[in-house]
Length: 377
Image (cartoon, rainbow, N blue to C red):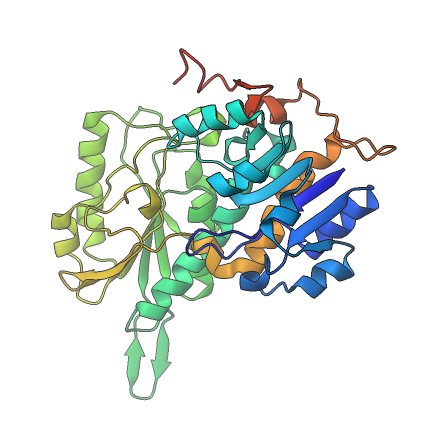
């Protein structure tokens, strides 16, 4: 069986869907791994590290994808890549189906079996396959590092002969994987950290990291299926906005992480709230790719509004490309390896497996995921 790893071509995408570790493991299972030349350059993974692990290097995209049974990518395939894939090939990547529903028919018409890795169900067994968790963890860390780089003061309290410098106050909005890592990183840098989330169950996690928890007092639950947060009532949102507005005036750094799969990012920070923040404050909006949690966020840009620096950079995990690639590649390996026949090295997908049914978009010329078939969401 041939596994192909093309070079990622979208602007700003530095990751690659393979690592020397996963290449070695696939080769050990009898899989021929072909990686397009230069695919790992932006992640500090030159061709030599892959050849040493047992991979072959494809001199071109066409050579890499020719007759590939399995294709791993970070982003969804371009028309050119799709055109070079054979009928019946299996593709695993971040396919963003909620924003690209029309694209699913293209995959089906091509006869490609596709798996959207970001749809991995939030179950214990699938944690090692969860690309959202692995990449969000790095994004939460990088958000704090970037905030510190743009902040004109120090994060930790410092007592010097010339006077005392107060610790920075950091407020994290949304306590998922990214939020928890942001809290931990800000604490390690010496900031005084507080956090909020609509899910009351996150309070214990926040406090275990040494941060204080800020939440609207309500009987309304923000817990949704799969560990996600759900959209709250208008009354709750109004009360939350009032709470945030009063809290944010005292903060130096605000990191927002609130996302609901398949929907625009909820607006948590209005322009009026930003105006009340101290000059020199920083906002890092991790939801910029879906419009942003802050009203003034400009996706892909770093802007200064009302004396506040608003960081709306995309693909923060990609700024840590070596680690992000290694984790992403391991997620892919953990997903596919159980379906590889150890005798023949061939792919025999168990279509009853929860991780398969949760991520499969197309199969045998049809769109099969219930969320995207007729009558789906």
